[in-house]
Length: 86
Image (cartoon, rainbow, N blue to C red; front, side):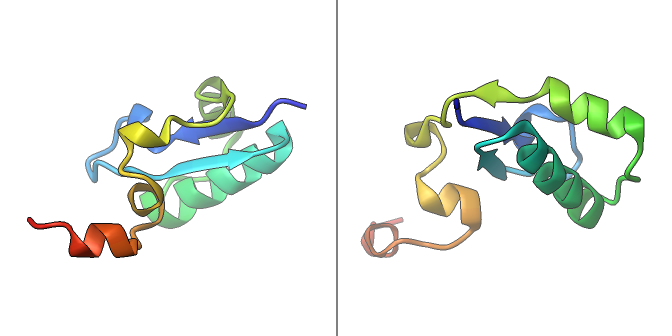
């Protein structure tokens, strides 16, 4: 089974959301992504939205070097990031 993910930055949004979600199955990824789209982006859960989201699925795991690591996905800082000079 190949892991899949979705990167919210690829779906146009006024809020420039940087969330990534990954899962082991299409259905799990779809449900988590739809919940995010409805709760955060105020979309309606429609068949059209689900189809658009499915088209954004990518196989594998996201390249964490491009996102700032765990903090880039969750909004939580790691110890190394807190100690980094700004």
